[in-house]
Amino acid sequence: MIETKIAVVGAGTMGAGIAQMAAEAGHFVTLIDTTQEAADRGIASIQTFLDRGVERNKMTADQRDDVLARLETSTDVVGGVAGAEMVVEAVFESLSLKHEVFATLDQCCPPNVILASNTSTLPITDIASAVEHPERVIGTHYFSPVPLMRLVEVVRGEHTSDEVAQRTMTLCEGFGKSPILIKDVPGFIVNRFLCLLYAEAANMIESGVATAQDIDTAMKLGCNWPMGVTEIIDLAGVDVTLLALEAMHEMTGEERYKPSPLLKRMVADDHLGRKSGQGFYDHR
Ligand SMILES: NC(=O)c1ccc[n+]([C@@H]2O[C@H](COP(=O)([O-])OP(=O)(O)OC[C@H]3O[C@@H](n4cnc5c(N)ncnc54)[C@H](O)[C@@H]3O)[C@@H](O)[C@H]2O)c1
Image (cartoon, rainbow, N blue to C red; front, side):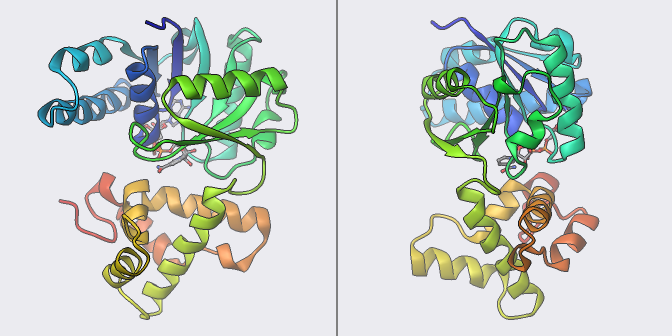
């Protein structure tokens, strides 16, 4: 059994998934958020996911309990990351917030600790500009739901060292993932494509060309996609999608990434997708 520790900062959709994945791979994990309530919500979502696995005979109750026993929560970043081999940041998609978090991590973690960001769109080199040791900052871009999706885009910033890139690839393989090592370009690979689809789907709905259901049916039945575009947005979060599009639009200057006003209205109305119960679909 591996006995290294992984710390995850941010216990939302992605942070909870990353924590679960690492605990399932045998690591001890500390899941950190700003409030105990938020951290507990992360653990509750992991518990629900694992309970479903037990009900469906994908794991035994003992295996579930072992995974849960390797997870702890904290609201104190400095104490929570102590002893970790890697810290994965999964807070909101805001460069200034990520700078704050990385500056703290850089100060409290010894230089051999890998500092990884789960950012969807922000350049790793920009995130690393907040720290004194940018060679240990790297992107590990996971996909939702993390315990099930096999890809991780491992993103090398301008200053990421070869050693940190190699250790990150090895850790991700140990998590049961298939990592690809890629360049620090806007949107990396997957979101560079996906953001175009998100933007166009929202434009089509806003202009009355097609409904969300029609778009999803078209892509599922016409292209054999397992999920439709707006179903993916509801899963990822409409707010997360909007932030990703705004970041892509700003970074590339390309109109094709400009978010539709529809997405802004949905966020203002708290129609965030599955997490708020209402998005393009009613999830209640
Ligand atoms: N949702 C997706 O499908 C997806 C996929 C890949 C990457 N990402 C990226 O992952 C990151 C997190 O996304 P998410 O969907 O999990 O967001 P989320 O809104 O579900 O969760 C973010 C969590 O971070 C916490 N947080 C905020 N500031 C914090 C701080 N200073 N310290 C500790 N915790 C803090 C919040 O309380 C919240 O629980 C973002 O960078 C996003 O772009 C999201």
